[in-house]
Image (cartoon, rainbow, N blue to C red; front, side, top):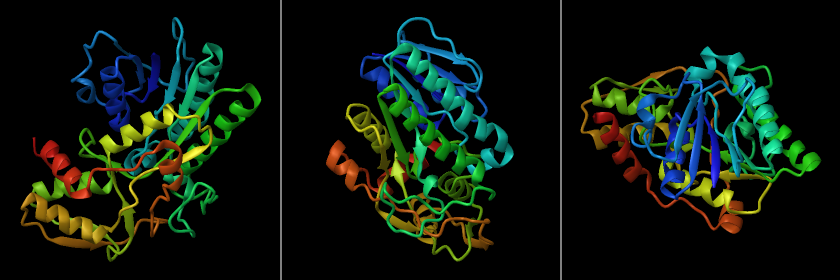
Length: 307
């Protein structure tokens, strides 16, 4: 297949580009390099079936020839980046999704929009099934990211219903692994870098808030199985194994052999208390569930950052 991937120089995007190349497909990558990096692509940049274009998906997109798939993975998913670029984050979810959908329509291609667990906001239902409509503040500090994804889902499904585009919408829960940035701002790279440097790990609040972390290899497999399914509506992809942030900090200190301590800081505004996917739909329709244990994934990620 001939596949366009937006955000292909980013964390999840680069892993998926590499996977698609290994499966024998041609990959055209677009990235504006705001949060993506050249180093993420170094293992496959010169692959004969890979092409990279530095381009902002909120601008007009032209691709020569046919496309089988358009995968819209571009997004500023890190709190650090969407805090610094709130308008750009909204434009990627709105204009970028609109333009990539238009491209898919013009090329008669299938379309995947990478959504997020953030569409559930600070959930009042736990774990979160796809039917849950969320608890999101449309004007809060996280709204630029949350609402960009909620709008992206809405316009994707509108193109599916109105124009018959064959759509896929993964709702991606917390994912981690190699190629994350050390200045990403998300909890796992932050804790690992602090531990490797011998600094105290900064836990927000008392650390009782929970997350569910999925290793990148499992996420890539889930995305691939979703592409090969016939499910047009949103599907949760994530690891339902729930862990408190304090437990995560203690585990990373242990795995790195660090002498770091733990300090506590105030919780960020509207930080969700709990986050855990209900993946019943993925198990049933995709025959997918995560296989990599948290500790195994952390060990691989620690080795990456230790370099």
